[in-house]
Length: 317
Image 1 (cartoon, rainbow, N blue to C red):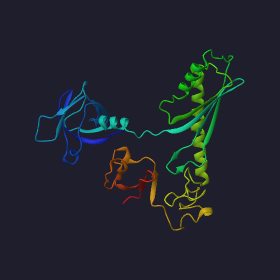
Image 2 (image 1 turned 45 degrees about the vertical axis):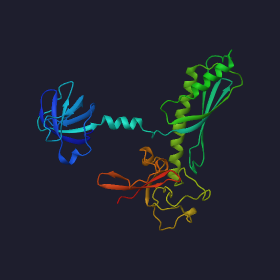
Image 3 (image 1 turned 90 degrees about the horizontal axis):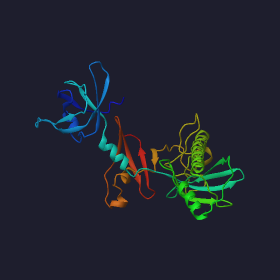
Image 4 (image 1 turned 120 degrees about the vertical axis):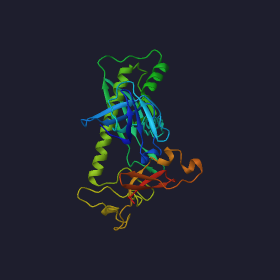
C-alpha cells in the first residue's frame, strides 16, 4: 500500500492506455520504464495498483508526456494523480550492486558416538577494527541409524566439504572448513543440511542475545583499537545504559573523551556510498564533492575516513 513518488496526472485514457503529463517540478531525472509499478486513488478513494507494461513518448511533444499501455484494464480516469511505487530500473541496480556483505565463519565438523556435531566461529575484521570477542556456536545432530564408513574416502570428504561450503543467501560465508572425523564417514546431504540449519539458527540467536546484553550494560559495542583494551576513538563513544545520558565515554574510561564532548557523528558505517557507486577516490584517483543523505526536510552530511574505509553520518545541517 505504498504510494511511492508522484509522477503526474492522467490527461487522456481509454481502457488499457493512458497519457501521463508530468509537472515541471518532477520532470528532471524522472522517467517511466517498461515494468514499473504505478498506483492511483480511484473515485472511491481506494488505492489501485497497475503495471506499466509498455511505456513510450506521448503524442504531445510540447509537454513531458508518457503513454502507458497495460495488458489489462487499468481503471484510471482523466485527472487521476499517478504515483510510482516500484521503479524496475532502480530495483535492477540494487540487485546488481556490490553492497552484499557477509560475515566470515570457521566451520569444524566432528563425529560423536551417536551422530555428528558442527561448530561455527565468527570474527569480523575491517581494517584495524575487530569484534572484541568471537562467537562460537555448536549444533549436535544425533542419528537414528548406524554411521556408514565410505568406500571412497577422498570422494566422501570432497562431497562433505562442498555441502558445508554452500550457505546460499544467508549472512554467513565459510572461509575455513575443518573436517575432524575419526573415520571417513558417508554423511547424507540431509544430515549436513540439518547441521547447517541448526547451526545457523543458533548463531543468529546467540549473536542477537550477546549484542542486546552489551547494549543493556552500556558496554562498548563491537569496536576496539590501538588506543588500548578499553579505549575507543572519540567519534565512537559508548551506548549508554537505560536512564544514562549519552556521553562520549563511561565513568571508568572518562579519559577517552572530555566530559563536554558530545559525539558529532550520528552513525559510523563500514558500508561506503562512494565505494558502492564507483566514486571511491582510492579506486578512481579523482576527488568527489560533498555528499548528503536526505530524509524529508533533514539533510545529513556525510564524512569519509578513507584510510580505515569508514563513512560517518553527521548531524543535520
